Image: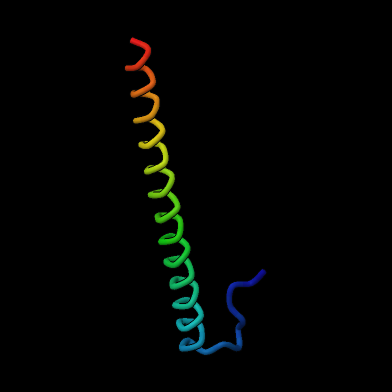
Length: 57
């Protein structure tokens, strides 16, 4: 798949690239939110496991 058509103007190419960068930025931000949620869940599980381990001691 060609990234750019030879008939496209520089302005069109730059516009297309901006859309691509904006989409990547959106997806990166979405992944960061998911990562933060997973980290919070891991911290909660760690806390629960530590409490369980303390109860058994």
